[in-house]
Image (cartoon, rainbow, N blue to C red; front, side, top):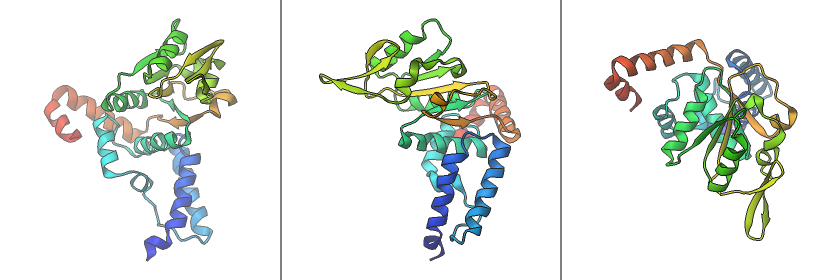
Length: 239
């Protein structure tokens, strides 16, 4: 049928979206997706007109879980949630460009919903290295904020250069060899949407841009207003 015939074109659209769109802010991302649609459509590949990327790459249960974890109800954030989910398959840690602090709380809420107790540390904190070492050893999900302040200390961790030595899994952290627990997870976040990351860091992470849109800002303001004045109504909206 038509749906089966469109599979190849739709797969090309989805792959191009996941590869090129997540680092872009809302306006250039929308322009890219329009151009991709025209390119795939003009190539002769059958494809679904105006393919709903979020619905294609996620389930209704996924989207409900995102809402319960506080993800704002707008297209950009939903696309970013898809990109974060799929980033795990590439074995790259997410790097959130998050000037309005939308993505980082969402990541923390998802980890907590999975039963973990994540830790947050600034890349500029005095105890940064100790916090990373502890998270690696004990398998604690770690959110590193102010990622624009990172130097090369995390390169081996970001590249997942884990070695097995005498039954231990270890990774280099600075000059130390640190044990790595299998439950360790990592996400990086920065509020500086204009920072140019070093190629070594950019190549080892999946950049995901949460720079707020007008629709997202309106939805977030509504959520905050309802939480403050009508918490029962907000709970029903999120259910």
